[in-house]
Image (cartoon, rainbow, N blue to C red):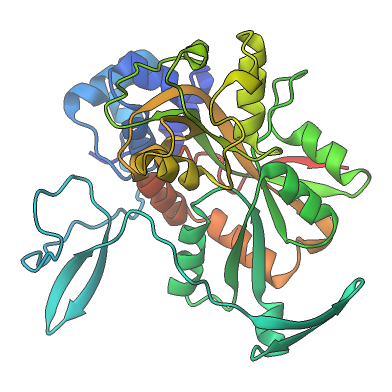
Length: 375
């Protein structure tokens, strides 16, 4: 049984269901439904029947052979696993052929690394600077800069390298608001944004219009993800909703001002009548989604607002609150540039969309779509 991804997503959209709603009705997780829609996971007969019933379609219509390439399941050598002990599945691995054998090596969940640099800043005065670099002008021209807070940008970097693209991607981790500011100032090719407009309940369009003033730009879909609460292992405090933040024993790790998660937190606290100043750790700020989960895993806090991917990366409990749309905003003047064209080509690849869905649990059904044009 193969999944016809377009048919399944179209049927869900026609019924007006989000991934969370349909997954709940069918008795499966949202991640499982995302994997089915992306063609990564083959549903069992019982799951296929339940999905067909909820979508008022036949199993043959939803799960006919779409002729799409799928991921491969291969046998590898695991005998030399250096970590030892019990393995939690699924587990991220690197694959290579060594000594004639296909081997799998466990990869760290997340790690601090020394990133490569294009040069060293030698002197700066006002708006001009001198940099010592070993990069050629051609290499610099083929570098893509992406500002934002999505950890999945590393998958795009890997994709471009594997497909021998002349373009290399560099992530500039920052909040959504700062990403838009950098875009406006000409400091990045694309700004990753997940900001909800309180008046319209729409994502990203109003903040983009405000930040970019009269500069024409295009909003490209990347993914939908779940935002919620990540807690310490076991969630011994029983944290289930925002009102629990008023209880004793809460130690928060927060995102910086301008982040989409911080905006949600502040709005939710206000609606719950909770004074942020009374929350231990409200001023303890970190700069990314993975950093929120890392701080909790290290025992520096016991709750934070982040995306499911971060909680899953550190195997921490997650309480989903809402789905959000994460988009990339690009100035129209840069749409025909070599780096941006390479990025858009990747975003419009169904194989790339399935990779992101599989490794991150995102809904990638709108990846590469033009969401809107703003000016």
